[in-house]
Length: 552
Image: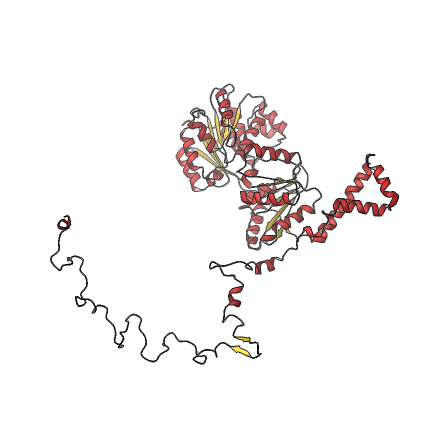
């Protein structure tokens, strides 16, 4: 803790850090905390996820905040309600014995409860832009006296379309505040916000480092898109105790995959941005208690989930960037325990995977999925081990009497085999799985059965047309080959569009012929001898009449 003491922190915060298990500050904490404690400059910090940036701004705010204040002293904006909860809990754990009131303000929960707490007095507000705007409009949240405004993961907020809300919130804050902006990237909109709302500021950039954890084994499987669910089932079924998070790209994918797993009798649940906060907390409570061992989530919904002892993290959909990949797999392999990060890709995603591997660091090993027989063999081994454990632990006497009655008329082997078949027949049925297509085969047959934009089947277009491949020399019922060219009235000669079928001069479609063959001039058929119609003259052929003459 000596390095934290050198940063100028109070004994109260040092004690809180020690209680949370902190030993040494991270790079961003070393560079940020002294600046925020001593100077008066605004700050822009570019740092990727997982570098400890929450504590880097939370600790100075706690140190600078005053107890028993009757106004909001700091406002922290986050892109999601999950991150808002995470940041607020982090601040509460770091404040130690200092009496500071922290409130997370986000959608999906009762606004009246938040209003009641705001009326009682709050020192630090952590919230999402949408709900913060709502409370400002209702005049329950006053930011005119804040000392700190923090934009956490600013690039994510802009990606989610919160630019207008952020600007409105900043317009309602104290003009003499200190503004802190944290972001993994620095797109132009963020630079515009800094230029518009920040005063003299310091820019810090923390170089990206390898964040993957050494105890996490990284593997990937290359499968056809239609085989992803089957591949996932095999990965789960060859694991001793699967307890992990499966990441999907969209909310629809989360719902579909959750329903598929539940239909196959897996203990699974899903979370995404469309579910209520009450439902989310219920699902996470079941997952932490291991009453649900498979959690399906989107990247946004998974922010703020802090669960230990995960055995697997599965990238059912490949993440968009290396930072998201690192953030995903960093959830397993913690506290000295091993973990596995599994990624499914289709052939067209190979280059993206190599890019992620290069930037994120660590080696991803390609593996082949186990066969159906291998999965069944693993399940039998697991059943045998489970039965042996029960035998060593001893059984209750309630089953011994039934066992003795069964053994009177049956041998021990046949009796035990019958019990196993009764209990595990459905689990060990190979028909529960389907054969996987090879990646190359699936690529060739990807159009099979599909239709083009004209509603025609791709595979039938050539074979069903006359003149397609193989149709030139088809056999007739009598045996000899049929030549479609000989069936033409001109003895098989090809049609030349430049020459008409009838003899005579070349046909010019631009100048139609009359019945006698002479060229027809459409202008001569007009009653005025071919003169063009002049819109400036009246129909009677007189002088041009003004518009006034037609009023009557």
